[in-house]
Length: 55
Image (cartoon, rainbow, N blue to C red; front, top):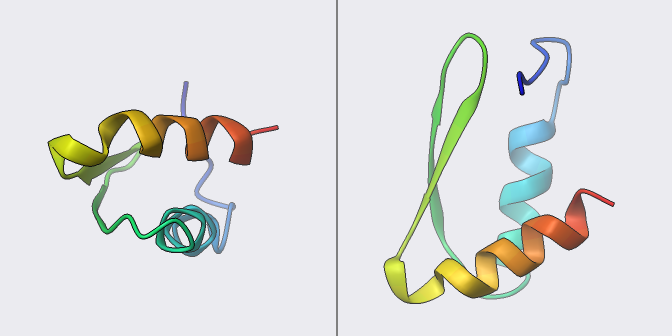
């Protein structure tokens, strides 16, 4: 799956969603997709948050 370069604010939106749950993240933006790094202890919760965010 590729993220669109026209999706302005996407990084801010998902980082805010994670932040609202006390999860910090580092993002590496690439041409076709982004990588979101979270602390290993936050992995399961981050996946729940991001899954809910994607709906």
